[in-house]
Amino acid sequence: LVGKIAERTRTLKTGDGTKNSDMGPLVTKAHRDKVASYVDAGKAAGATLVVDGRHVQANGGEGGFWLGPTLIDHVTTDMSIYTDEIFGPVLSVVRVNSYDEALDLVNSSAFGNGTAIFTNDGGAARRFQNEIEVGMVGINVPIPVPMAYYSFGGWKNSLFGDTHAHGTEGVHFFTRGKVVTTRWLDPSHGGINLGFPENN
Image (cartoon, rainbow, N blue to C red; front, side):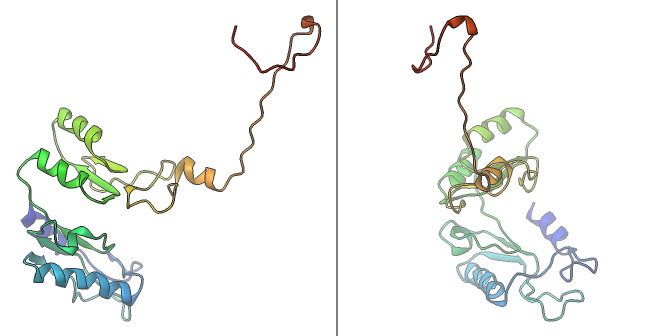
């Protein structure tokens, strides 16, 4: 799997998105350097750097904050490249021996943004969607980011604030709601009833 990912990663073009590139720049130099420092730390801690994007040659994008796709293998759960959400084009591979070990790995994390499982086993997929503690779940989908009319956002420390960004929660955040409770009595009732409605 790592070999196939590395092969595909090396074909990706980093550069100006208007000039036939697959990946654009990071938002600031400070953030680019921060992401690169995680790669440095992972390598120093003993992880295997398979594809190094720190010195990528960008396509028509002089002056941008470039960091190409990076693949790092044999990452362990005590490395900062695993424990922190780094928000950069870095794929860290953590190896496990079983489904249960993988489930525990994800569920014990302080974060819970998105995760995915790839399987031909419907039972395994159903078990995963029920047992995983993450806000966005993909089944045979590489990036489980739903369409805008569904909520986008994670659980645990991957959620900032108390509502998600899209979907009905986003609409409700910007909406002033009004609740109206009414009761219309049949004219044959012979008057008004000022009591609280009851089920008889």
